[in-house]
Image (tube, rainbow, N blue to C red):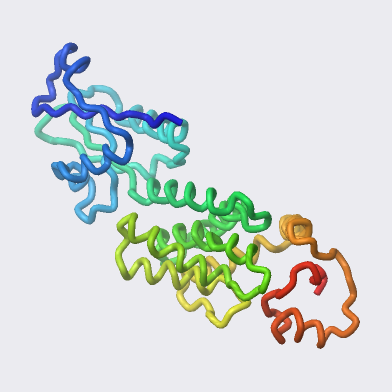
Length: 290
């Protein structure tokens, strides 16, 4: 699939002629454009936020109409072109007091990072049934809902939710039942987060949320962010959705809808590692009602 090309104009004046617009530019793919802009950043994004959490998108000069029209256009463009959904409250802008109709408009970096992470996760989990991208996004939306009104780091919640099951396929492919997808997910998440430029402290917090989202290990959620992820994930195992996920897991793993164990204590010892909430060793011997 051919990548989109982005035009950068290596000139200092903004009053371009039609000939300059047509001919005086360089084309780059998305990654090259990002690196080029980072290298030659003139501080535009800092005009919006000095802490660097915003991504610069639009520079308007000589614009004499309502700024809300540009914001609506930006929202529509990001949704249709990049599948990034934002609202008006997500958009931040500054106005150049010394120049009429001059604006700099931005959205938080988190939206671009979330989209990139979602693409990575979706590719990794394409063969998973219960732990697929649909489950991830349901948990994501529930976690954001549960976080409303709480004093939490919403970025940690969003990113940890997107990555919490990325190791699901590794657990699914392990016939011994010894692989814990929560631990694997945290391991896989760390290099992704490092590449995207998250701080070491934030990476540790995100990985802690991921590790502790599963009740079948010894890691209990301690921070409010971790507890919100834990609750959102468990709520997706309830009700009709939970039943549907259960049947999907049964079909994927050749398990039983109902099969009575001759001796439950023996079964727990042999196939659940000695704990009623232990990890399943042989999925084909398991029954959903246990």
